[in-house]
Length: 638
Figure 1 (spheres, rainbow, N blue to C red):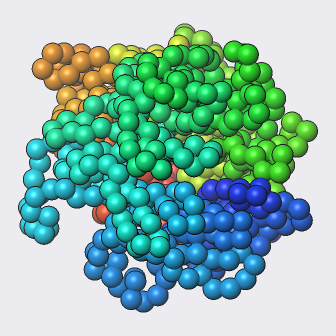
Figure 2 (figure 1 turned 180 degrees about the vertical axis):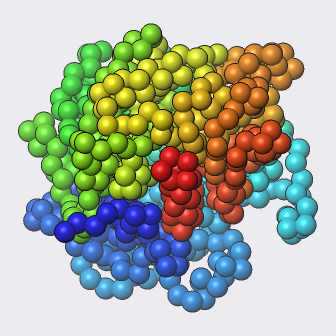
């Protein structure tokens, strides 16, 4: 008999984290990630998939292996913490990273080299040369950082977990030569080379490994939203500008037909426009090749065409771009959640089924096939409820969403229900497995969720809610709530809860100030006051664009869309969950709501999770948040 999903069950899950083909395309290195609940940390292992045999085998077993890559056809390399001395040095905050080499046909991993750079990653040029990416501190009084922090630039902190406080700290690029044990800087001390943008862009090498393309700029007080693209010549060791980038946050890049192409999301249109652009290899101005309606993610050169993974409603179709036309070649039921790549003439990616975890997957006859069986015992051990799709009519058009029934629900009984609101807002729900929702369903709740205006994958016009926060999105969510109650009469309309994180936390705060239909709320890493958030978040431009103003030019507009303005209308008991190292939605945002509600006599409480950021929590912290959220809803809706 399957077990009911509880707050600690999520920590038993494992999933595929990345996958990379060997240079000879005969094998695939992939990572498996999981959790150590007892020691409250994440784990990672390396596995190998043999294309000729269609079989997998495990390469590392200690759970300490970071993301890996291929050194050559018979050797993989990876970062890790192996040995007591290395672990103690890292705990003592010595800034270095160790790279290991492991033969795939047997033998122990050996230390290949180490560099005096914290949290470094690497790209292989050849067996002797490596491009190193990592954090460099160019600030003054570095030795006194535990006593004093100096701020004289923006952003002065960053939600990227590698950074925290960013003043005079830069992502830097070096060339490391193994035979000489020599580390040479490619970028200057104050040049920030983008390595993890909002959409995961990383520097990339040309196929012949002679050119490195990267994004960044040198600055001393303020980093621009978009930065130029540069190219580093591996042989001459010279850097030149490829083009000035006045518009895009870049997602992916590649060489194709004597030009350099990029997938770029418009930073000037609130992330609502994802385009294919290109520039001549010699440099110059970029040109827009195509502006497709579906959201593009990553791209892959495949002969004389480009393959892309797209977002179209709840699906992730794979499309081919050729002769300025997009053609759908597959609509896999296993959703695409990584770059596409080819090996041995076969097309692979990492993705997940509706009720499943991420697996190494292949497109066969335009259909998806999972090649790994990671997390099998986990999925078989617990009872998961599959979301049921439905469409609601809003004053602004159709709204797509889903409903999850309670575990072993009975049609003649009445049940409470919880509305979940996603983050972003440029994000989207689907029917994928969500532990937070499954936890509620396992304990007797209906759970419903939808993609209101602002969500991705529904076209550019649908995504654009600049200056409309709390208006058409609120209408959509309430229309979907009405539709769910009409379709599922076993839901008690007097026992409704609402919850969400980030933008979902903003909307939770907004909802409780605009309706009394919800009996309890759980607001996570939320937003309450756009005026104060502008000066405390690491994405001030996001606030300025989304609210069409800043505190000195348009404070009235920003206040109009701030949930805190409507705090006098709030009567809903609310639990706030905030993370003290969250620099995207700072703690003060929840504190303003909490203080105001307590003074007004409305039941409210806040959980502040230590050493947690906007997207990072330990397994035990996640379990605590799930447990406390359930307890809060049980208290007021039970």
